Amino acid sequence: MAYESGALNAALAAAVGSDPALVAELRGAFVESAARQIDLLRRARCDANWHFAALRLKSLAASFGVQGIVDLADNALEGAPGDPVVLRQLDAAMCDFGDLPAGMQ
Image 1 (spheres, rainbow, N blue to C red):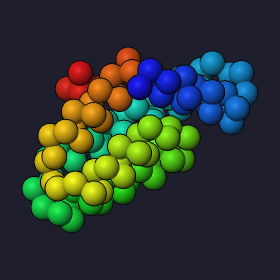
Image 2: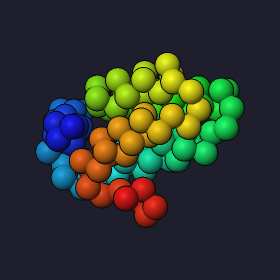
Image 3: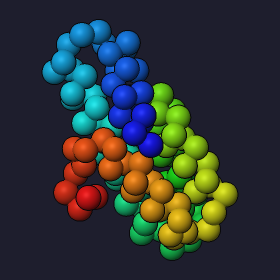
Image 4: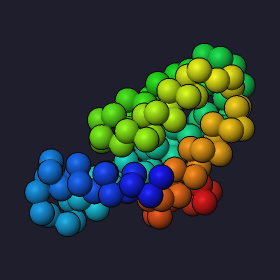
């Protein structure tokens, strides 16, 4: 999903202009928040926790215009807690962003 990082950068540039510091700060906030939700998905042991983490991830990705993560969050919503395929796909998608928080790599 190499297009994910580019789509995020384009959406941020369109929203805030050409301020590279602000774009970098918002990009970092997205990556950190998405990583947190994916971690919550990974630790979810019941349907409710899995569902709420997937919904928060979907909302976050939609607000930043990252459609690929939205689609993967939809896959999580259709799956069962701890679904290893969904978690691997999310990890792979997030690796495209390159500046992941510690523990997400």
